[in-house]
Amino acid sequence: MTAVIFSHTLRKRISNMRLDKFLAQSSIGRRKNVRIYIKEGMVNVNGKVITVPAKEIDENSDIVEYDGKIVDYTEKVYYMFNKPSGCITAKKDTVNKTIFDYLDNAQMRGVFHVGRLDKDTEGLLLLTNDGEFEHKLMHPQKHIEKTYCFWALGSLDDEDKKRLEHGISIGKDAVLTKPAKIEIHKYGIYKDFRHEISIENLNNINSYLNNQTVISGYLTITEGRKHQVKRMLKAVGCHVIYLKRISIGGLLLDKSLKEGHYRPLTDLEMKLLFRNG
Image 1 (tube, rainbow, N blue to C red):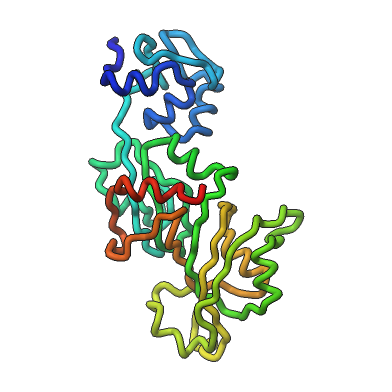
Image 2: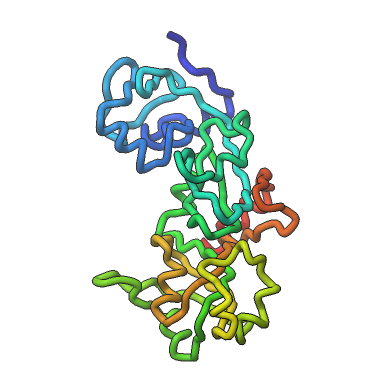
């Protein structure tokens, strides 16, 4: 058994760190998941089971094992992925195509998705093997803005917009949503706008709805509740038929990045992610 070798610079940066942070940075899993692994006795330090996530370790001399295997540090990677509609945000699925079916397995060791998008939602999704990065980006107290472009059946008046902006109930006994931002882009009859969105991207649309009132716009939220954008708009009488995430923080989806494709984030883009966090 041999200890993992780190560069001198990396040793200085991560020496004497919490065990859960070390495991998250070593691509074992998300911060919340590795805490569970530790508490369940799946992690050894120098041959001794440790069940305290906050346990401080020295990576220069300590040998950390997870599930019987020594933990190797892997270089951190950060990708922008343009998720197509019709695939689910998951590693594997026996029925549906997943986002990882679009990715190069040779590059994806330890990589996971940051947050998720619904099957019929497309757009900006981040991928990484850095659990600390995900923790920082997704933590509710960071208030990282996420903006979605939507088309919906229905209409919105000033009172509806105020409810969305100030907080709205999206379920029985649910806490009101946090303040949001909404910008209306277009408003009219569905048949006049259907050419602007590929028909395969629309949900539950048929010829009987050609004269239905539709509205498009941008909704910016700082939370990540399940189906949140759809539920917020439903609460004011709108049925979402198209949804695309176009930004996270100050990072915009690269318009030149084709659906189903991905690329590494630049240093500038990494900084833009936390611009409003």
